[in-house]
Figure (tube, rainbow, N blue to C red):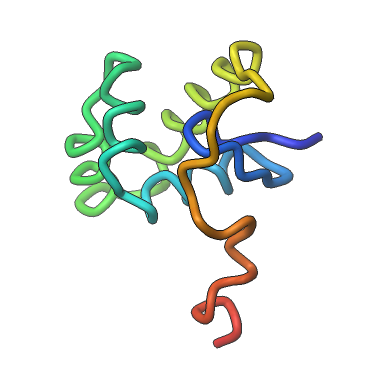
Length: 92
């Protein structure tokens, strides 16, 4: 199943990977989208960094899954790369 980032429409095969993308991108449009869902991007990030497990990733993944029904193909692409595997970091 393809899961899209609700902000930039990049695609992955799981909502956890999209959550990782949203946290990793951390730009204004992604933060604003998370905050618009009734949760604080900053609080989730702090919770992830200081807590055990992947609770923040799981919370964000669930929000992303619920948002899939609202996605439109006409949404503009806010990200430059099409997949995190294209990143120079991925080659390490």
